[in-house]
Image (cartoon, rainbow, N blue to C red; front, top):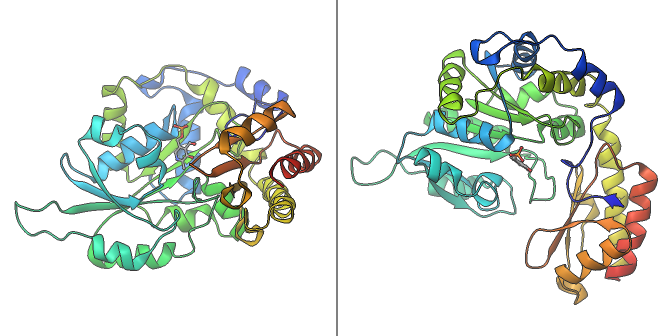
Length: 339
Ligand SMILES: Cc1ncc(COP(=O)(O)O)c(C=O)c1O
């Protein structure tokens, strides 16, 4: 099977497993796991922040990050297909009492819409916007890079509204643009990054922010039952991933572009290859007359796993465990199904 459902499906390599089994360990709830401490310091340094907090998932890092910026009953603005509203099962409402309002722009920043949505402090009658959250790259937006990121950050600085960055795939944005991850993350008051997506670690994300924000998030992580003990065994995989697997993301981006080009030839209008900037290809089946369920099933039958992500949309994601040859084969299989 060639599994292109997500970049989360990778398995730890032999080198990563060796790093995991040889890591020095301690009890992280006491702050005594040297490998966790090293990971948190390393990621905070890479992202231009004072401190970091290792979490079991990106969703938890997002919950803690948004919660640290938005009071109970307060509002965060985000795009309508953002992971925090579409794929975290209402956790920001359920766990933190945070409400959301959304703009709609295929995952991208739309400054005009955001300006129109921002709710000022009008007294104890209207909800006030406490933060804006942006995903970079954007998962359901086809791995799109946020090119208006600085313009939004400038606008929010002027208004004194903090920015939350869901940087699950910030490494991809950084490699694709050649811009250091810190140039993005340092503009946000709280930013999360994943180690278990393109970077190939089995588990883990890191939330970064000021020392005070991270100290408070650490309390909430424990309160939510997600403090952990000898987590260095997992942090070691993250450190290994940071050292070995960032630059190679360019290969995933090239593979995604090849898939996009093959599919655009097979079913014109289904994909715009020049909009595939990183490792995610969203394929729109509207013009093909095929259903998402049928294409997913036929692809599985032919040895290729992909996911349906909307009424007419499929998602194909390239990653560390899918070599160029696998991606070319998968593209040929999908092309024959949708053409
Ligand atoms: C953009 C984005 N943010 C956050 C997450 C959440 O990560 P996790 O699955 O580790 O909770 C994902 C997962 O796919 C994601 O794509």
